[in-house]
Amino acid sequence: MSLRYLTAGETHGPQLTAIVEGMPSNLRIDFEALNFQLLRRQKGYGRGRRMQIEQDQADIVGGVRHGQTTGAPIALVVVNNDWKHWTKIMNVEPMEGTDEEKRRVHRPRPGHADLNGGLKYDLKDLRNVLERSSARETAVRVAVGALARQLLEVFGIRIGGQVLRIGEIVAPANNLPLDELVARTEASSVRVADEETEKKMEAYIDLIKKEGDSVGGVVECIVEGLPIGLGSYVQYDRKLDARIAQAVMSINAFKGVEIGIGFEAGELRGSQVHDEILHSEETGYTRASNRLGGFEGGITNGMPIVVRGVMKPIPTLYKPLRSVDIDTKEPFNAQVERSDACAVPAASVVMESVVAWEVAKAFLEKFGGDSMEEIKANYDNYKRQLENY
Image (cartoon, rainbow, N blue to C red; front, side, top):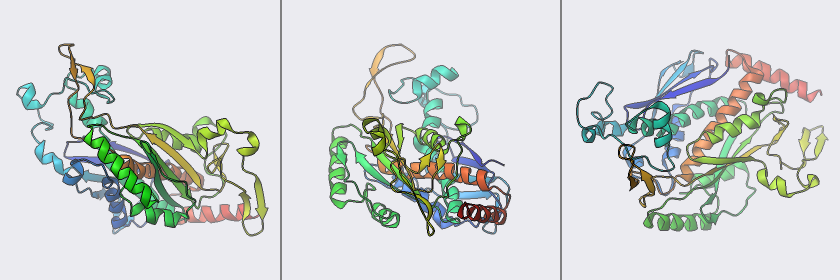
């Protein structure tokens, strides 16, 4: 069975819900580690007041018993604490009242799904669009990714990430071991490894916020401990690098993705791009470099996966842009909803989560079984196959 999930819920609704199907039985769940990932998403310099209201925690209400998965679908719930302020406005029952009482939105904000969604679904209250298209949905995706992380960790696969750029401020390149990178970025308010860059980014975010604007950036995710052979070259939709790229682009406000040296490859010669193949009795087949970010032909080559994503500035501004009222067709300055000046550090955590999910999905496709014991046996047999190649 393929690993998959669905999410449901609105940003000001009672809760966010996810159903995860295809997780094997007998995976021990670390609930503290699961909720730690949700906490990581809420942190970061530049976040708005919503993060002070919510104390995100994932409650598992199905598919886990006595701390272990049963093989049944896993149901996750993340409660919205802000729901108490929106119970009347977001109630599922019919409501009689004025547009003001319903908080009807008829003025679409540039950069959001408001107008496109209203046109597509023929919705005259754009709140029905913005409630679902909100980045709040990523909270439950982080919870789902946390389950994937725990599956991968059993097999020695580890994931970390960092912020490379916020606006005009770029972090210096580093080649830190993953454990050290994780430790440094976890201690940073903006998830960078360099303390001097952290101070510059904080000051830059303060300036942007003071000007009523917002700022985006670039984040990087690294996956280590992978076997050769995840993904496939035989069909376009089985290429793991392509699936990771789609997952990253599905994150709210992400507008670009690259793997390895990415777009830089367009500036270089082939001899400066491709990774030479080495072999030894101790390591088996390896690469002399990792410019291709752990992939060849859509398949992992045993080197770390390195993927970067670019997040645009959040479009909800305190310096509103021009738009058009859908009722009157008259121009206006877009209304302001509560927002963040910068959510790049949080986006780094979300990207780690969606990458973890795609890697876990490919891992189970390769070594699939109904229980952890069956998967381990399949994986051990494959490792022996690689050693004897």
